[in-house]
Length: 344
Image (cartoon, rainbow, N blue to C red; front, side, top):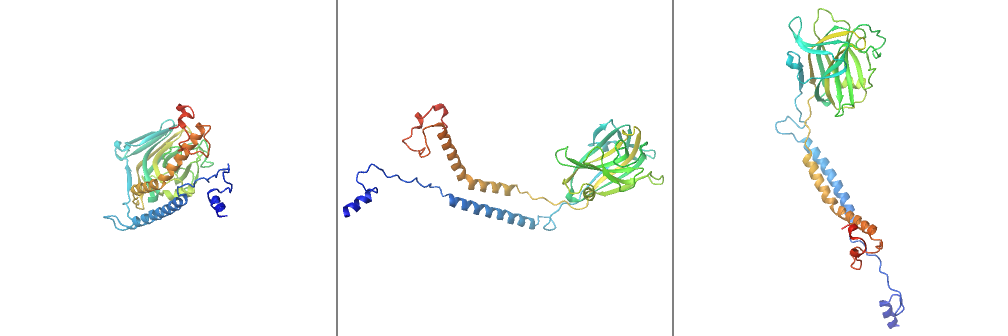
């Protein structure tokens, strides 16, 4: 009995000299997947919390020479005065239908201003400013209308064939794509009352707003306008889609009515009613985060590449089955197929 038990220890089949061989189970992978996954989740969560705390700490610390935790830049004023011919430098022209005339010259009283005239033409001049809307900019200008286009029926502000006005000041909101723009046109009209607004008959992204109406009295020469751009944008378009005022423009046209229009603009400027906040530089934080992420995911990349190579070997070598080990010396890969197709 003892001899039988001792034999059974060495022969699990219980039969001495059995032709059946013991099949060993597949070796368990030595790579600790569970530990690595737990460690990855833990380090990711800790890094995320650390970045949040770091941002909060930096936002509370005041920079040298600043007045407090919320460091800001002084409010800026962008001013364009048309007091000499050189004031037109940097202004660009866009022609829709023939070219209107924009020249800085002295009027009959020897006062310099931008003289805008149109004879059956429609073009605009514009200047890139790039003012962020978070500063709550106010657009202001001084203008005077001389001659209004005639022959309009004045049925509605957005009537096609009557989109001619003596002078328009344009605020253009855009991103890098010039096709994605929203435009507000501040109009001086001789018929519709102040506050009338409508969508342009030629573009769904353009809104027209009458800010001055009627023929100017002879007693006054210049008329001052100030508009809150954020407030007007939300009134005309609804939700803010853009974060900055890309450019400003000046327009006079009379191509629809085939008549003439004329106006003057002496000055146009942008006031920021709220200082611009200083943006923190997060390049170092991003760089450190990328390095930590690469260190954590490096072992997983090697394991993934080993699996890809194994799949390539199985595809190239027909007789190599799943149960074979690529590193086994019994498998000769050099004679298993054409050498030109070998993956390594």
